[in-house]
Image (tube, rainbow over all chains, first blue to last red; front, side, top):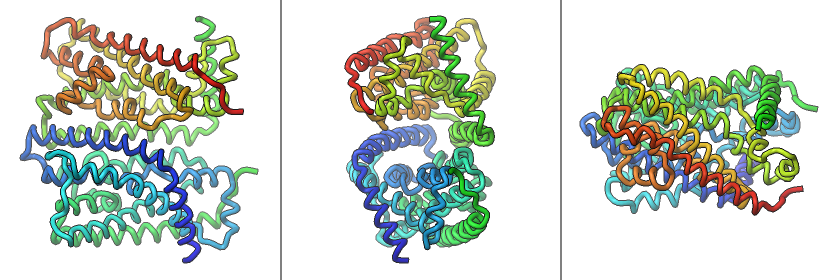
Length: 267
Length: 262
């Protein structure tokens, strides 16, 4: 366990060095956030009755989405891992007395957390002092906030566990490009990054909510705004936990198979 | 000029042959690119199932807007995305080699990169374009057809200009600036809705800072029959001035280029 924590620490420290890159990213995310707010305002003003959640909750959803982009963006994958598989450097990693799965998981968690740490604060602070319709609001009570934090962490876990599957699949396909772009574009839609899940039509919505992708950003961000509560909340958190465990188990299993059959590339 | 163009196509054919060495990856990337822009369409589709209209625009009108904008972007991307990799060309000193060759630097930069996977987006753009045009329910008079053609030409010039500025800035910063994505990918993404949907301020920004509305909002008003003024037909061609400014910035950067790398 200790070695994975130190992998985590090293990566975290490394990630925190890229401050200028983070500043540039923040600018982009503000533009994105504002444009999203404007789009949803336009729809809200056109027909408030058809809007499936409170507008305030929607605004919080958008700003949290931008602030914690690094947590949930499946397209932000670790290129080093793909490179090491492609170039054959993976052989060195395999020689080490560590589990590949745990090591990559720790590194990924560190990269995502460091990116989010650098970016979330400025975005959230500004979002809280914006003028009225676009102002982010506090959650209803402290309990909601605690549950939000818990599911945020769990959501990060689900996202990483899913990305791990893509890394491991690229053991089999060698060139990661295709697999990666294919899976990420699929997830983009099902996790609610394109259109938040409540906006989908009823039958589709109830199916999508059962998929693991709903446990990424959908659950924590909607809990924050008070869109998921009561019985639905318990169910959502339970489902999220189950998917997290399942994805990790599948990932570990696949990793074992991959390690046995591995062909080291390069020379 | 003629030799320049044949050289450009030679560059492209070299890149195509090298990409085709990884056939499976090539195929999946095309599918992926297709899906990514398909997601944007799904976004519009599901929003309109719920809302039917936004700020007075119906589904088919927004679809027309989205498909034309996507087509404009894809055309520009097809020719001018080579500027995207320009930061690394400057940084590793490759640009010195380009400078000493007796051909236009722009031509060589454009020929340096040609991503075939963009065919996925182009394919998507063509499908959407055909769908958008047929589903729009517009009676296609000659003047409207000309408007669409002008929009495509104007939009291609506009996005080419933005790609060029992006590259020109690399002369000074040596690094690609991430926030420039707002003007390319961001504009493509949010250009799916007519810019007045976002409110007055955005409409102004998109007219006077970067003239997106010239190839989107204004000619669209003419296409949808909301104005009869014939000026709206030629508005898209106004982007030629924008392209000229961008070219000026590029020339300025080129003159101030200091060699870099080893």
